[in-house]
Length: 220
Image 1 (cartoon, rainbow, N blue to C red):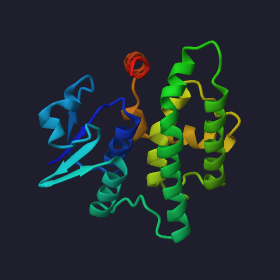
Image 2 (cartoon, helix red, strand yellow; image 1 turned 90 degrees about the vertical axis):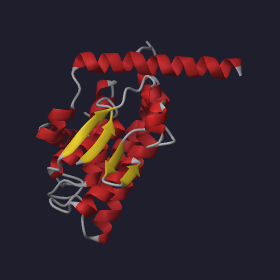
Image 3 (cartoon, rainbow, N blue to C red; image 1 turned 180 degrees about the vertical axis):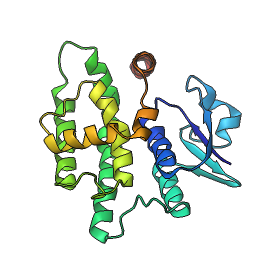
């Protein structure tokens, strides 16, 4: 059986988790304790870059969430999560890359801003630009894949619940607010959504990591 190494609070792992559930693929979940297990020799033998998620399917080991999603789509093509039309595929990939490169990277700044009396206007403006781009790609469709879910929905939809909980308001982006409500009603999203206690624990843990890194840079 396919093994899925992940952590339930990681939005990057969540992309793959949702994909596995949406496709109905049987898997064995292996939770990696990110307080140190990712640096243990056993996990480093799977991913020398000490990141999650990792999927092991028989003799095959796959790193990087987008590569994993592509593999799952190719091996388990039903239900399809990649559109066939060139333009639709390009839109799907753009949403995935903007999510990864422009929005996910803002999580630390959002997290620190959530505990600050002063809003981080630069970060919120950058995220608003990303959401405007998402609205453009979504258009009048219910999903980024048109009438059906796509890998773009999985990728963006794994992150947006987190940034909403960190203070991002979707009301200025009505198409995305409607899309967000739509995906959050799906069973796969409900099953993977962390409760408030777990979310607060995650915030404290990530805040501690950020502060330690800043201290290390200051001493360097």
